[in-house]
Amino acid sequence: MSNLFDCRVAFAEKLCERAELDERIVVVVNDSVSSGKLTEFGRRFPERLINVGIAEQNMVGVAAGLARTGLTPIVSAASCFLTGRATEQIKVDVAYSRAGVKLVGMSPGVSYGALGATHHSIEDVSWMRAIPDLPIAVPSDDVDTAAALDAALSLDGPVFIRVPRTPLPRLVELRTPFRFGAHRVLRDGADLLLCCNGVLTHIALIAAERLALSGIETRVLEVGSVRPLDPVAISRNAHGVQGVVTIEEGVTAGGMGSAVVSALARQTACRALSLGIDEFAPTGSPEQILRACRLDVDGLHATILDWLSARHAA
Image (cartoon, rainbow, N blue to C red; front, side, top):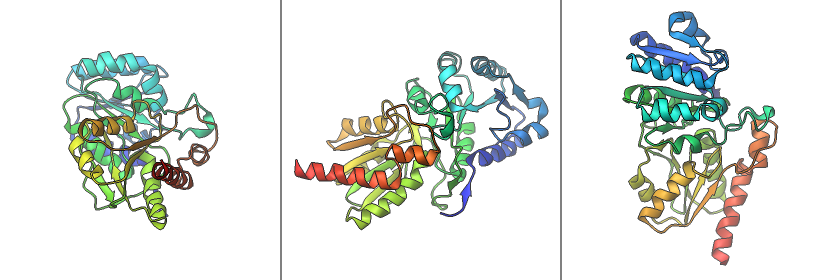
């Protein structure tokens, strides 16, 4: 896992590729051309890049209007500002109106680590999941990010995609392409099911290897499609294990873990542990923050072993 790849670059390259083939694609941003790696898109398609300035609510409203004219708007902005400041416009102008706007939350989670809680986007998935009928993708590497954009452009209607800022290792290159409503097993194991997505997926895989050294064989299920879920696949992969652990780079209230546990509770009795960031995180590098929140390999390994030990002792 020594080579790291920028998901934003993969997103921008795929966007240029698709825009070359489809002149309906336009991009709406909030002074985020550089941070969204959209300079090349602006050079090649200057008349199709609309910068509304730091005005997120207007940005989403403009995109919804463009969608009504038959265009396919891509809204690209820092996830903390896109989802936090324009929630009503996303709910009413986009989701409720079934406008075909593709919302792209850049630099989510704690990737803006040193800028503090105002720039951390740990609530975005929960907020977007609270809005009905809005598909949500949380890709885990650059290949997955490009595939998620492809899948989003194939859907008739709005979509939210969370694009990591932190360069990430490329995961299982031969896994099936991202698809809404599908989840992928990245590692098999009979003792524990670990559900993950986004920047924590590669950390979950390393933690699973560490747990194996402690005698716990862990199945790792990548839940890149937070909505729609595949409850049958989740239930099938949870069958027979000692418990289910969900980890996410965000608050657990209403997030991916909440969706997974709710789906399981409807079908089977299963012990579950949801791990995430349930407080305003400290400032620091993303690695330092994940370590402080016990979402690094050491923290996950220790927390899961403690949880399993407490259950056996009970």
